[in-house]
Image 1 (tube, rainbow over the protein chains, first blue to last red):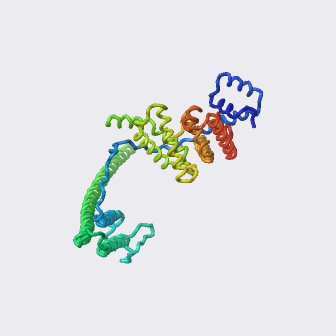
Image 2 (cartoon, rainbow over the protein chains, first blue to last red; image 1 turned 45 degrees about the vertical axis):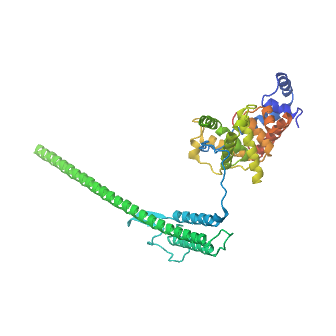
Image 3 (cartoon, each protein chain N blue to C red; image 1 turned 135 degrees about the horizontal axis):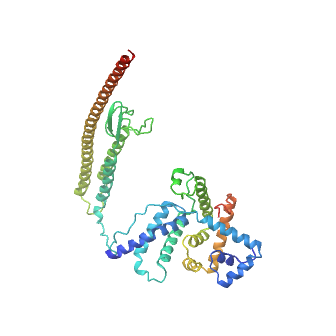
Length: 259
Length: 182
């Protein structure tokens, strides 16, 4: 425990004393080992504190717009609630379906190999089990995406069943409204199927394009390499021949001189 | 309104680092500190019409930040942790030092920083906040007292107690008082 107050010590440390307070404290420090040691220790601690720096994040936020303060939210009419709920669920299903895609690209001794998540291919180890399977390196095999698509189908079916089974809610729910739900689900299913087909076709076309470009470039590169090697070989042979001629010339000159 | 937005974004550019640094040191988590900083500027923008210049703009921002940090601590019901990574990447470290520093000095500095971070995380929130505002943001005792709505003597007591605890923690971690070679 030091003889001077903590407030005085802290004030001295941060140089927030008045002139007279500081002179008085300086005089005290000259005769008090304990306070002098305390001040020195806390000064060292302050030096150490200077090493504590936060990491450097990437700042990217800016105020870009301001929402109108009195924006109103229109109320939903109750009889549309079931249809909108189903539509929201169907949109989520659609989003999940379009997000399911896998592309594996490998180039090895067999050449360029490309597989999509929906295609059967070499090395597929799960055959319609509907279960995820993993290769030794941990990559998910194509059969898992089939199972996910099957899960989507089941979900759509459940939505259809629940839409058909729902009793009429209120006096305004009519048979035509129930049909609208079923029709919507049918259309969503159609969209999911079309999206998948389109995606597969687009991906396949692009892959074929990539493979053709790759092969074309590979042929060009191989030809260039061969030409280069041939040129180099040609040069080497010519150099060898030239050196041989020079050596022969020297030999003949040397032989004449010996005679 | 477009001009006001541009002007405010200039303020954001000027204050985002100090606000983030304050939040990081109080709550000790990088991602959450960034969220707090972002929320600080959002709230400040919305409440700008109510700021009449009765205090420094920086003090006003700091107060918003500290309130958000306090809310975060209460909501998470946890004490801040030291998030310094365990390993030291020598290559990355070499880019940070001055040409006059050896790798040993750089590593030592990094380890010391980590020890300080751990010691600060052990402090009660009010002591840690007082030290952060004084050491890293240069506020006077009176400014800190005004911001935290407490007496001047309380601020000084918290500073003294906080510094003493950090000093003891560093000594127990083997950090010598003259380890910076000063």
